[in-house]
Length: 580
Image (tube, rainbow, N blue to C red; front, side):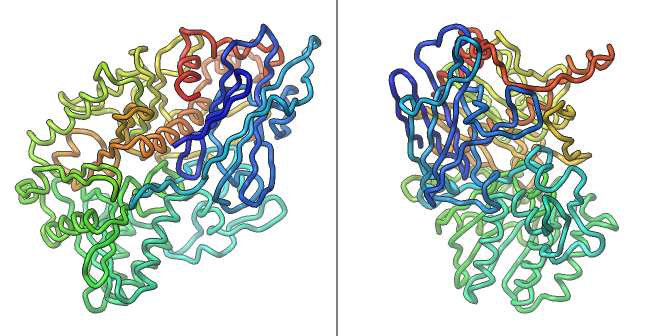
């Protein structure tokens, strides 16, 4: 979904994501040499309040965060999150976005904003939903200026003591005020946390509703407490992974199991299994009077890492047919979570299809599969990714080290070498030689390793939080032809690798809908842009070795910044046309 408007050759296009908006600008004819200073971007929120979008960069190279009114954005697209500066919560509803091209005068001074050149569009900013389907994302901005400014670069994510704790206790002091763990978690968890909490609260607040739930990593304090409350009410069955990492002496999953058994009444039970390797699903099924009616799935582990550190997604189907299918699989696995028997079921041998208008057209696969089915599933994804009709592929995949014959991973790793396809990808696991950063004058796609994006940004940026050993990227999704009629997105808990499809208890979804694909494409763009900027350190390291101090990052006051956006051999030109 998008809204667009134009004014004398200048256009603005707003693409709707999940509580985020991709703004894409275009000027049909390249401005004269040295004339364009950038774009001033503003919005009017549902309360009628107008704000200019902030810019961390300015023309002076100082550490002042200024508005794009005086420090224009020198890009042709921008992903906007509401509530980044003006409020702590997320104000949703209809937003009006405005873009104005800004120019230099003959002395390279910024010409005053000309309202006659402004273009505006209206678009909804809210959790993405369509039919009986919605999607949410974890913010995954622990390593960011936004987090550092709000909470500091050394803030502890957990208090000492019990891992199940009151998140409303004070976590720290910043910007002349105290903040709680709840404040911090709400900001980091974004809409993924919100949707997960909402579905469990729905069960807690209705005596007729019960829960069937799969969990892999499991140590979010609020989710754990809600599950214990459901156990005390006799309204939850849980399948929790018991692979070696989750049965270690200090594993919270073990501790939770003991607490659960002490609390459980009635039908509340817990079952531990790991199929051939992992019980890797992250699923919550709601049942009313024992009939399934809603299900949450996706890549997000019900853990503080999954919600507050990793980039993740959750999907919610408010549809009896989809929820019943998930619960049928749960019942097959209940007290019988082993791979050999599951591979023989119809759930592992066929993809179940659901059609619009009830939900976006969706195919759902449950693993572990036999080798033939698993290979065929991966090969189908590979065919779409490499098809000559494919014009764009955007992806965010946790691990990309699997080079097994028939795996999707090698195809994704090679994509950036094909400049006939617009490709933008990010991962936490790829060899240095496979990384492809932005290079001016090249149409090759980007492949960013977020795990190695450890660049300490020069002034005006401040020191950021270190992720340590935690994953930045935990998504497993691939978007194909997001803006075409054949758009599709593969997503879910599957790592998109052959080994997992043969050995893990997982679910892989293919959603064939351009609006859903666009929401995921915007998620990929904002992550790749974020970590690409933190990967550009080669020149800085050379300067450091030669005793040259870091140069402040500042806006270009020559107007030459636009050249790459009009160079037909540059990927920035390709994406200007693609998005705007």
